[in-house]
Length: 285
Ligand code: SF4
Ligand code: SF4
Image (cartoon, rainbow, N blue to C red; front, side, top):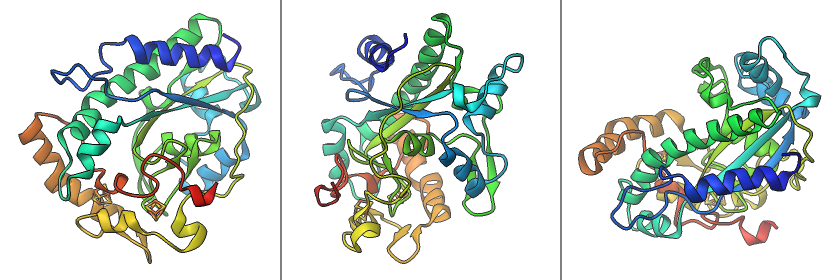
């Protein structure tokens, strides 16, 4: 288990075989398209930058690992953050593209059942690596995982899958705060911190956290803002987290529960019908 290919194999085999990777539709289709993996060093200085920006409660990989293995902590230099992307399927994106005010059924199902699978995948990866001799933990699954108030960003968690994905080279943030990856914005993330020596993925955008968004890179586009039914994205202010949160809590989450029988907090209308839906905008690569 000492190569990236072997780690990718653990993830892709679980993606292919786990019954929980399902939208729970009669079609039997999977919740997610094929996953992709990237690796960051545990002591990458960007993790400290994230902590400084978000707040002292935000964990570095070293801190998360020490919580999981208090009797044998490790320096960040001996840790790797294995970050993976789970892209929405073309069918889910196509359905969601037709919606204007509430999420499509497939989108709501992937947000609910697909995230249940994602939680299993995090644990499966951490347990498989640990059994192979590389102690590992999924920070998002640790008992201490919680949301706190960040002075700068409002409600924020003490481990951010998106920030880990950025450091690992998967992609950058955007006008709507969501990540634009090589597989676009209609994706979800997971990660595991592992005491393992894996080669690190090249971060081709350096430390520019907005490099792959047309608005920040070229002052054009703004398509995601037009997709939001409550104007919670604007080119002047970016993402209005509170406005977004309120709409999801009051409208889309109750709608999904009543209509599709799902929990969770689906919306994501701003993640489709846009140039970065399933790719980095070609003008930026
Ligand atoms: S739709 Fe355009 S402005 Fe919005 S995140 Fe994508 S590239 Fe940026
Ligand atoms: S997720 Fe938030 S920002 Fe995006 S469309 Fe829904 S309410 Fe608007």
